[in-house]
Every structure is written in structure tokens, then in C-alpha cells.
Image (cartoon, rainbow, N blue to C red; front, side, top):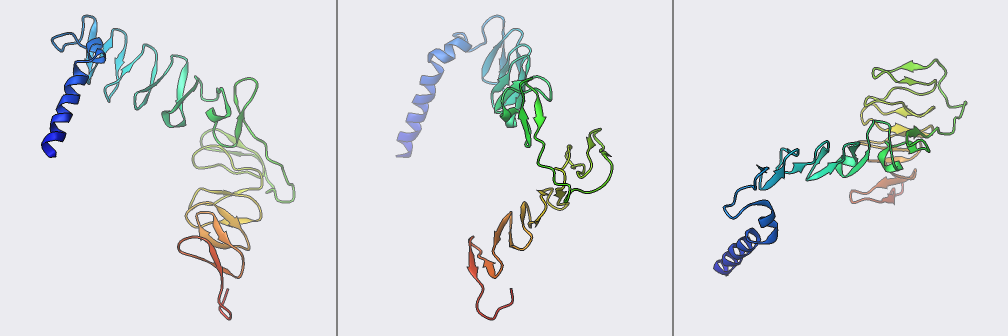
Amino acid sequence: MFVLLRFLMILLLLTTLSGPAFAQLFDRNGQCRAGQFQCGTRCCSGGQRCSFDGHCIPLGGTYCGGGRTCGPFERCVAGGTRCAPAGANRCTTRADCPGGSICNARRECERITPDFDPNTAIEGLPTLCDDGVTCGAGSSCLPGGGCTRPGWFLCEETDSQCRPGFKCSEHQGCVPIKAVDCGYGKWCKPGEQCLPEGGCEKLPEGSDP
């Protein structure tokens, strides 16, 4: 069985190397054609660049990784899976913008202004952050840049933002103040306990909440 699989693998490799795709890249001696240069297992044309992992990058393009490239007036977004117009604040759709913002009619990312509740807002003056951004009264600077929403607060241990009436959840996220925290933003009602596999169950009679 092993010998048969090995034979099939060799046959597949030979078929691939002799196919049209291979012929487009290499000449009959297995060398890149004139005017091309070798980049990993590929041949790149003049004017192209070779990426660190052996992919050809078009002239003026930006390499996003994994063989994906954006055009001369674009940038990589969403972990290199999509392209957006060049410029840190430029966008085509909302997916090009960071969380809490939209892509407006000017093709710019614009932060969504949350409902402002003066009863929960923190009194004070605007704050100048280390990255040069000014956060308005009732908000604070975030470690990675930007501001918290007015009236919201930052969980220092998890970097989660919680709104009024919530508390920091263990590891990540927020839960209602009176809820039983199960971690990672999951919670149970008062008088219940968290189950290891997820979910909640009522506390046994006579046990402390």
C-alpha cells in the first residue's frame, strides 16, 4: 500500500511539473525565461518584487502575506485578507474601519457617537493621550490608541470596555453588575452558579450565593 501511494505521489509531481503552469514559469531547462528572475518556485517579471515567502509582488503593490497583494493606491486590512484605499482613515466599506466607526460618504472612517448620558458621564476636561488624540470629557485614553465611549470605563487587566451598569468579567468582556461572573463575558443570574461545561444551574438549597 505504501509503495502504491509513493508511486502515485511521484506521478502527480511529474504531471504538475510538466503541465502548462510549469511551462509558463520555466523554460525546457527548468530556468526562468529571459527578463524574469526566480522567486521561490516561481518566476517574476521585471519590475516585480519577490516576497519573503516566494510570491511575486506587482510594481507599486503592497504585500499582505499568504500570496495576497493590494494595488498601488491600496493598503492591507482585516489581517491582510482585504484591501482598502490608501490612507489610515480611508475606506470603501465599514469593514475597512476599526470597531465603533463607520465609512461615511467621504470614504473616511468616522467614529460612531454613542448616546451620551450626563448622569453617568465623568466630569472633567478633555484628555490629551500619548498618541496625540484628545479624548472628550467622560472618556479616557485606550492603551492601543483611541478613546473609551463617554461614561464607559476600561478594565485594566483585560483591556475590555464596559458601559455603566456592568462590571469587568474575568479574562475578557463585561457582565451585569448583579450577575454571577463565569468569565469571558458569560454570566448567570443571582442564585445560580456557573457550570464547567457552560451554562448555569440553581444553587443547592441552603448554600451561600
